[in-house]
Length: 330
Image 1 (cartoon, rainbow, N blue to C red):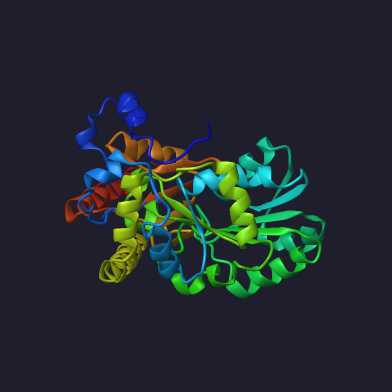
Image 2 (tube, rainbow, N blue to C red; image 1 turned 90 degrees about the horizontal axis):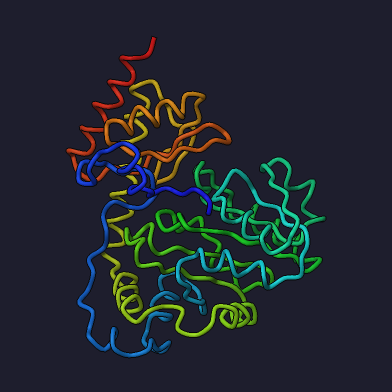
């Protein structure tokens, strides 16, 4: 199993700090969960049905005509590589590590690329995978560039797979509206923007034929009844969507200013996290963990991802810890 953020139980055991005393900033998930609606008993008692309105609510939210709900976009990340014969796959890196791993496990030859290398290798690839905005760097590739890459891939039957897990905060940058084109696949995550990662819900937007193949791969009842009720309610709450967008943007800017004020200017980020590349990443991670603040540590390159604090008390606690770290430096 690959490493991910949110491994709080392991940190509790490692550092001997009780759960209630942790500030967990290790995941790029909005710290303000949407309200959970009342779940009727029938959602628990009956098998899920696919004509209950979830797909329609999601299609309206994403501005598309058809899509496939999945048990978190991770389910699609693992299943999609099995829908193609083995071939050459480029992954724009660094990014969410499950992408490269999923294609490798299915027998594909994976080449991890930086953005400057894509044009050189593109015509030899069967699939190009792009996380947009990137996790963990926050880098955004323009819709125009993505559609240009897709057009070249489509000439020889290739796929462009775009993971838009962090796109809800900046919907104007999304290419979901174009995902009915053959060979263009867009993944959307529910848990991050809506702050409900435990729900395990995501969506795949692509041409109908591919969605049908993916649905057959995943099998029936992929989404639980209670999740379908909750997801539909959250997707239709337009007032809360705008509030979340504004709140996340304000918090992300505040976090960037805080890091800059202690001599740790972010190297990137988006409206759900800030990203810091530094040779001292492991030391900062340990320093903060011993104070009950959990960050996400990356090794290649040495870097940290800071999620958004929730309360004013959380902000003050993070600020004090960062100032303590600055004072200890020579």
